[in-house]
Image (spheres, rainbow, N blue to C red):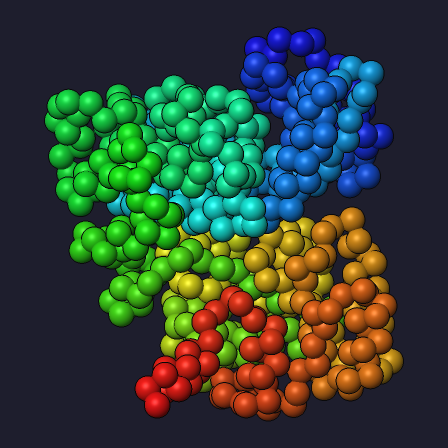
Length: 497
């Protein structure tokens, strides 16, 4: 229980916007409440109330800013932060996640997770850890455990409670605060050194051992192998043992390294995504999501999404293009052409392939989550136009959000209008694409938005085919995201001379 009395009760209004509905949970220094949004009727949020001493308030603000900057499908969005100086209370407002904790799920199923779900589950956790650990500076979660993982009704795993997450500081020898949960926290969290990415990997090993032993063990002790379920892959045992090494230098050194090791297991074949052996064996560093949103109907969102997908497939392979609006017909018509079926004789499979890109037509958000657990390097979401809650949330969560607007001089202002209407959301990573726009229109929009990622897309009649001029624009748009193999070959030839 929270040691300090809470400032909130049923009906309390905080931040002049959030009305408290009920308590969701409490810990030593915080409570979490469900709240309804007075400005968005029907919208519910989780409000976390914590008590901070005046001398550490600056640190609390810094950590809050760090959390608000995070964006990943398996993390709740932090959308608001405010303080109540008289009481020393601070409040974080975040997504309300409907579901149960992994711990509650384990208890409800007598400690049983189906064997075919354990490795995909591990890959999902690794994907979000890889995202956190590759931030600048890296974010260390430090409290990976069953009670901090939510399982939604759609079987979506969400990592919650960033109460003790911290940014990694290379100049420190050890953490100033020793926090974590006994049995899941790495040894260095208790005075043996500073926590880093390998500390979270230790906790992942403890979590996997917990799942594989039906909730009986989270630490490697003599004879624990005898409690690991017999039907599970034996390949998991050396992976778990290495994750649980006492010395961080003896563990896996990154989430990407663990992903690669799991992918090399012959026992794991992600048949549900129908990925080829060549795709599954490629180097895997987590799935990245590109979301394409049109400002209005006819602005070219689907054409741009197809162009981007085939560009990425030529650069890195393993790309899925997802049609995330249930009434769209574009992918259905394309599938008829690809499979040679007549109008109205739609295949029962919603997946088809064009030049190495896996197309998924009329896909739900739950399906997108399942694809994130596969081996796709990139998932491109065709969101069409419009701003309904589901599509807007996926756009805001994406690693690379792309806004597509008309390049016509009299329509360029549509993009500026969209940016203003969503100004409460961080927009620093957005990219703006204007098909057939003039350089003057791009210059004016960059100045108005105070944003340099505004691009004119050249005429490109066939989005499935390579076009040098279009590739130059996309090379600039995705600079630093994918390796420039052409530049690397040139450097090699130069060295050979």
